[in-house]
Length: 115
Image 1 (spheres, rainbow, N blue to C red):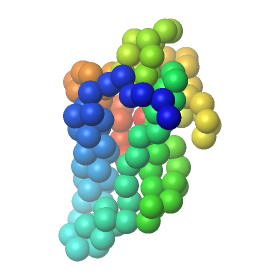
Image 2: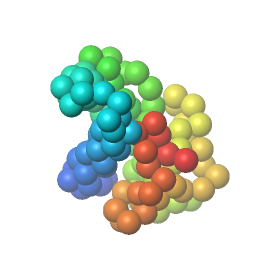
Image 3: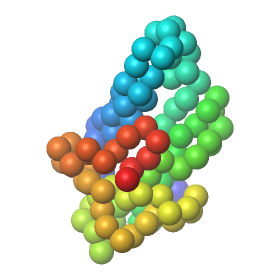
């Protein structure tokens, strides 16, 4: 398995940001108990590769979909750049959507992905 070149606490904060946006999206449409049950069955996992970390959402422990990719090795983009998923296996490399190392750039990150 490839090594993650980013501090774990940034990845944890990123996962928390996604979950918080999910809770905010529900708003008053569901009871707090229902929202907490939905959160409990959903998870965020990080799958490191040589160039990117794939951020996947799980449902009951099974990968449900790709949320985003994070640059794990500087090249075209700096380390930590957040990229939209183009497919299950690859990111969209037209431009970065923020940087994991700068929380102020996470405005494009929502629970459904990055735009």
